[in-house]
Length: 274
Ligand SMILES: CC(C)(COP(=O)(O)OP(=O)(O)OC[C@H]1O[C@@H](n2cnc3c(N)ncnc32)[C@H](O)[C@@H]1OP(=O)(O)O)[C@@H](O)C(=O)NCCC(=O)NCCS
Image (cartoon, rainbow, N blue to C red; front, side):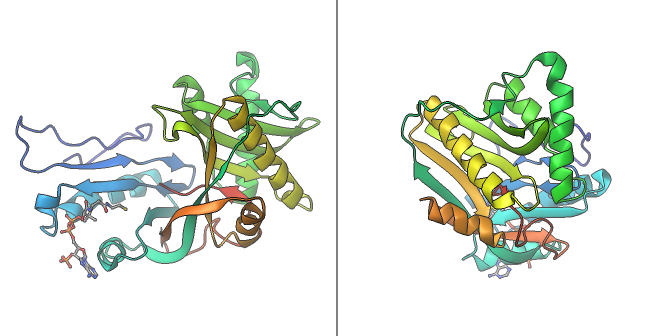
C-alpha cells in the first residue's frame, strides 16, 4: 500500500498484486482543487469487507490531504448506509446535506452560441483563460482552483470547458465530460464542475451557464445532460429543478472539518464529488 504520493498525482494506485490477488482494493481518484480535496470511490473486494482493509486504505488518503495542506476534505457516499457514514466518521468526516445527481433530456441544438470553450482557445491565450478561471473560483471559495481539471479534460480529449464571458470578464465556466470513455458515458454530457460568478446577476448567469451546457451537449448530439448539485446550494438546486432537471440518484456529502465549505446558500456551483 502506498504511503506517499506526489502533489501532482491525481491517483493513488493500488498495490502491485500477485497474479491471484488475495485482496483487491482501490481508491479511484484523489483530486485536489486548491484547498478542497475529495476522493472516491473507495472499493474493497466483498470477500474482505469488515476486516479493517478500508481503514488501512484511508490512512494514505488522509496523509496526502495533510501533506497537500487541504483545508476542506470531502466525499460523497450512500446516505442510507450506517456503515458508510460510520466508517468515514472515524476519519473526521461528518454527514451534511444531500447531493442530488440530476439530469434532463437534451434536444439537438442549432442556436447561435453566446459562449466559447477552452478547447477552441488559442494555445497562447490558455494561461490567461486559466488565470481568469482561478480568479472566478477563488471568489467563491478561497483557494478553489480547477485549472488542472480544465487542462486535463482538454489534453485527454474527455470533453470541453464552457466559458461564459461578458466583454473581457469571465462570468461562468463548466467543465464537461462528453460521451464514451469519459465519466459521462455514451450519449451523455456530464458537468463535472461548473460555477457562476458571485454578484447581483449570479442567478441569471447560472441560467446562462446551464443554457450553454445544454447547447454544448446538443452540439455533440448527446441525449442527456447530467449535473450534480448539493442541496445546501438551495437557490441553484431550485433553479435546476425549475429548468426540468430530475434527480437520478442522491447521496450525502461528508466533510472534514464539519463545515459548509462552498456547500451553502447563495453559491451557484455544480459538482457532486463522485
Ligand atoms: C465501504 C468499504 C470501503 C469499507 O471497507 P471495509 O474494509 O469493509 O471497512 P473496515 O473493515 O476497514 O472498517 C469498517 C468500519 O465501518 C464502521 N461501521 C461498520 N458498520 C457500522 C455501522 N452499522 N454503524 C457505524 N459504523 C459502522 C466501523 O467503524 C468499522 O470499523 P470498526 O469495526 O473498527 O469499528 C467497503 O465496504 C466497500 O468497498 N464497499 C463497497 C464499495 C463502496 O460502497 N464504496 C464506498 C463508496 S463511497
